[in-house]
Length: 486
Image (cartoon, rainbow, N blue to C red; front, side, top):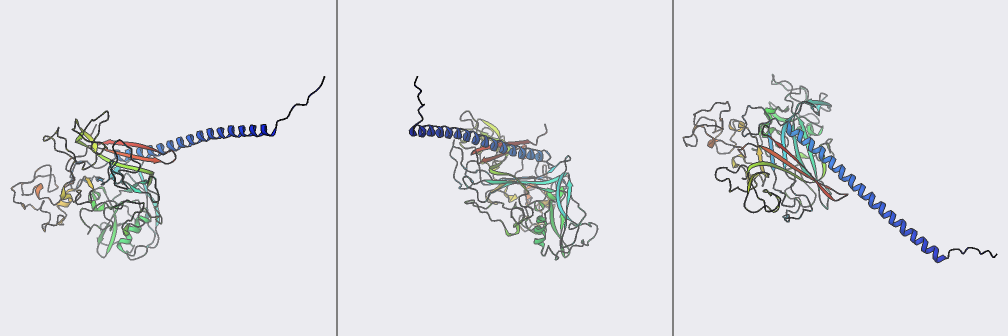
């Protein structure tokens, strides 16, 4: 029997086998890579959803503790804080960067409505609001202590994130300031029963000037809602109570000089975004340098609650808003493709949405479709296209200032029939602020100021959209809150 030696593989066969193995390995690597990318993207989406749910919970909690009645105007001595919504010129039908119209039926590729602002006072007994403030020490250095309060002033707003593109995104901030009324330690005013000031001199470091004092105090940092008032030769910082915050000049970022002895009525919210957002560079007034956003500030990044934001859209409920149903999905003013005859009424819409519901006219007057009362100076024409809902205060009718610059001071409460119309003070306006309606000749037509919108606010909706860069997905969370007892 003859034994044969097994034939080995030729070089060509070896090369073919190696190539096949490499191809198989490449396929396996691609499969695992695809699985890995999918898992990474899914995890990124889940993390984004988790962050958005946390922000939504924080926002719902804040809204649940609103201290102010949502009826305008509030009495000067009501002492229940304020609620303010600022609707910027941007909408969901325009691109926030280019200003171009969003194509109907096509999802926008960049940010849309990101210039709205939500500010109000809120209460929380469990847990209490916690913040820091400089207390005690000398004029050159302060000890930072932790303070607690059951009431806080909160501000929600978004700013473009420098350096972002494709798409550019925004950063959502939540600023929290403790409403305490009295702190009882330097550098706050500590002796209400005396005309003397406490030991810290305004001229001493680090305060140098009155404006520097106000700015530096926020950078130390300060989480207390304060206003600056002049008394004698010096300016002092006074912690705000709820009653103080009914006045716009005492609120966060409404009066960057800090002083309430001067300023310009109606003390607008300081523009936190540039008028033009082409590019990713923003310029703030010099007196705001370092207040929140400067990387040299001790507060830098502390108020950030969400990144990669492409919409922060605050809407109010207007029972007279028109609703059209061109297809399966109802559309309201502000939605891309909104057109046609209304078939229903009542929706969450932008302030000053500019539509009227013919089904209701003339029995129901449009609540929030206009641009605001011009006597507030917060209407669209006087405030750069922005519209504002504010609970307001009757303080401006008896503050000793000529707020409407007509050479007559407080004509709505002086007891004279200045406009010679024969009308008297009637509900819902209590010109004297004392709960008594008089026949002294004052009437709402004589008021120097009026709220931008006179109708009560029944509900609010906030839509927050984020772009998740890994998966290139857009996620949205919607928060709704009613102010009607139920």
